[in-house]
Length: 256
Ligand code: PAF
Image 1 (cartoon, rainbow, N blue to C red):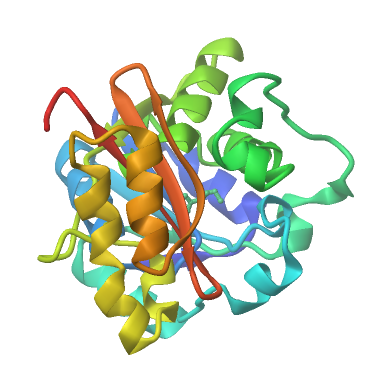
Image 2 (spheres, rainbow, N blue to C red; image 1 turned 180 degrees about the horizontal axis):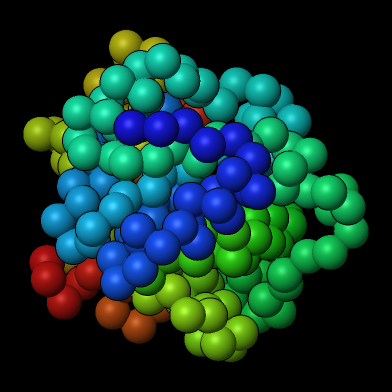
């Protein structure tokens, strides 16, 4: 497994004649690799000749500086796990490499990105769409893999790829859960032992057939601060906080 930090270096590898006819799969991450990421990487390895994983904690998608600061980072552990899973390249750029003009140019979606998480984290999806557009243009993969835990993010990225005629296929991957139902997330490692015990109730209540407002009340009684519980179409979305840690999840009501 090789680590690439510069776009020029990746361009040389990507355009090498030995890659002609080979498929490239891409998994963008912010590091702190967990079982959810691993399911994306494994699928990517299965479906493509080469797998590229990016690690970049993207500052433009954090509306809260303390959230950016406390976001877990553990490159050495990530490197070992990714290598074992069959990753060929880690793309590990610095801020200046990806934002040569600072944050002057952005990708903005004007409708769905303002709802759900977008209503509570202003500018979050502008940052996500901007960095994903940059990464997709740099890596030039055949397929890119995104977890359904961030279902709103997945829908917006899929929409952006369609709107801008991007050549990379956007592949959704099912949520991976801990044995107690908690959706795997890099943020889970920030929970205190007490909070970790309470956290699985989020998924448990979300998956009941109660209406959204009743679920909100049950979560609040259990000690969560609720940003939103909202059903749109056949999917119920939720975002909650336990102490300083924000968790999101969603349920496809057709499967429950
Ligand atoms: O889902 C994430 O980890 C991030 O939002 C992504 C897609 C890597 C963009 O920074």
